[in-house]
Amino acid sequence: MRKGYRGLVPAVHSKRVAGSIDRLRRSQRAARQARGAIALLTFCSWTLGDSVAPAYAQEKFPSKVVRILTTVPGQNHDWGARVMANELSNRWPHRAIVENRGTISVEYTAREALPDGHTMLFYGAYVWLQPLLRKVSWDPITDLTPVGLAMSSPTILVVHPSLPVKSVKELIALARSRPGELNYSAGGGGSTPHIAAELFNHLNKVRIERVLYKGSGGAMIGLLTGEVQVMFSALGPGLAHVKSGKVRALAVSSPKRSALVPDLPPVADVVPGFSAESALGFFVPAKTPAPIVAALNRDINAALKAIDPKVFVNAGIEVIGGTPEDFVNFIKADMARMAPVIKGAGFGA
Image (cartoon, rainbow, N blue to C red; front, side):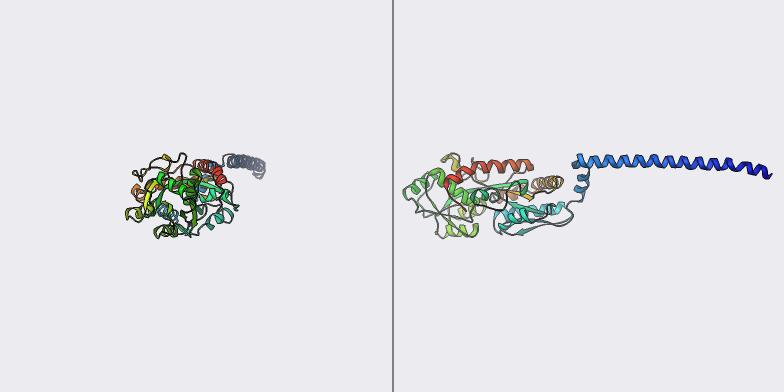
């Protein structure tokens, strides 16, 4: 009996060893498969980053409050930023808030803000035309990432009622007959009204002198009080004073008649090539991950479509929208168009 028992030991031992070896082999095979899967995912994250890791990042964004930096209160920039912040807050798990930092917003976004998509700049032509006027600390393409052109508003050419002109032709004739005697107001160097007025001077070979004010509100007060006689005003505020009879509107600065003010002829009807609109868009710091830029662009376009169109029309704003590439191309084209004019006019900020 004992002999039989001893005889069974090697057999049982062999089966156990064989089982252990089989389990070891299965474990090694599973490990190899796991390593292969990890390698594949790593490869995909390197070569197809926008479709693997970014998908996870997009689900997480935004992870905190998003700040929208813009100009001082009382301008189209501020109005547009607040309308967009309200709609974006309805779409995101975290709020979007507006910070009125003025022109320092541009430099801060380009030089100090983290490139994580939680700080956006909502601004206009100052961003890309100011570098043509003077030396600045940012480049609109390399130091900032354009996210999307959101909206645009033409300016309107308005004059004080005491000025004896009722058309663009009459204003040009008067300016030529009284060189340097007429003044125009603008809210700041490099602003759209400033650029529009100097473009008007340059193309018509007239000299209407510049008077700068702190903000567009001050510039309009200068016109209302008669301190200056001419102004290219933002459409919304300008129309309110036109309707009250405090100023007279001569033309719109868009290249064609605007649906917002269909009764006003464009300056370009008399001055070929004239165009000066206040385009506003979103930027983020350079090096912001492409998936975050794409997500922001998607949500911005969706917000523009969701807002009641009457809100924009009543404010004298035209909705634009589009891709980041569309905005980059717009900026480059506008800089190329204005560079020779600014150089030829010989004016700075």
